[in-house]
Image (cartoon, rainbow over all chains, first blue to last red):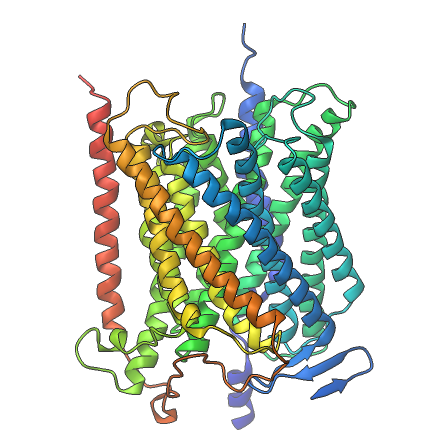
Length: 52
Length: 561
């Protein structure tokens, strides 16, 4: 019983595990920035008709 | 004491007991020195520019104004800040994690690339061969900027990217070699966030600057201005968000070093950093709010819905850091009323002074004006006026630069192992610098509200401006003189301390006003940061009033019948 308790205390919370995944955040950060800023912006520009 | 392992040579810091990899320490030193050199060049350019925009002085002819504006922008927004951040990354990955630097030669290669790149830019800009300003907006003629200008920026970005890669490798290796337990320390975590933002920023920089470089050497004929602006601003704006993340990490560090205590909720602080990771780069769209061809959805989502989540991150830090200080003070027994803890803070300690002043100038002037101008409708009257540099001088100079300056005073004894000289100058410097840069920012903002454009040597391009504009521009000039004096004080302290006197080991973290440690019995006791809560409410009221006043002013500009 005591061992179980110690094990439970040692268990790292899921949130902390996720926060510690720095390369996951690197990937998500680049995907969000590229998709919403670069790609969306370039898509808008490509749809703009050339000046007459 | 020097320790040698199979793979690295260390010394043990007598104050912090951290193991310091000597190769990493050397890289911290050279990057910090390069940063201060860039700050000096950019600062000299700054005072000359400010005394030109002060109409009553009108110091420089237009040609030199634009030349020095290029020098000022590239040195202050790129070289000073990024060199200092590289020093910060080596510090956070090796010293704070008790880790070794896996490949020091890679760090030296990165530094070499950055120095060569910076030199190319300095030489071409100072000799008038690249008077294109920080933005170098396309379209430009084939002779308007030297290929070396673009090559310099590309080399600098590649060098910084290599250093960021080395930082990630060091963090991974520290985890593998189990030099730290559990999660990364919060300060290192903040620097990881800075490195994540830096990766996107520097890659964008390469994408933006390679086509103009190819144009200058005749390989391509034309660079699309709108495409260039998209990629340039995913370099130019996030470059300042690297600063933001590094600055916040340094705020936490300086709070702990000068006042003690620990963050009230690491979970909350890390969540705020994650908000930066996810959303802060979207703020780049602020620069494109008046660009044709971009949809309302693109502009509004990026600058409002996305960006406001990153602003939420800043507001969490703006609560967490003072709350950390208040809790530490209340545990020391400063519990009278709402603000005894505030009065008893170490206001004479240079690091604390820099922390307090930079938080104030960054939040109350830089943050509030930035969010307000980032609103699309308000931006229609603010864009390309002096309000914009007013905002970012408060954020980048009053916030980041001052925080980095304050941190330098502790790098001198702990890393350079030299005694800090002229401590009185160091104590007063953050206050004087904060005052000067606040005047610069407020002068620019009020001049911009009255219609004064940015990036011009004089105001002749505007047909009609009210006479009060001259008062605003005088405030900019006076503020610049005060800030430049404070910059000279900083340089005097740093140069005299680093380059003269014998090497001595530090004996304490505090330089002027050490604080009693927080009593062990009080650690962990529940303390409500009530004073901080009141300060935050006052800040929010000020924020709302400023924001609404801008809508009111907009309503006086455009009458809708």
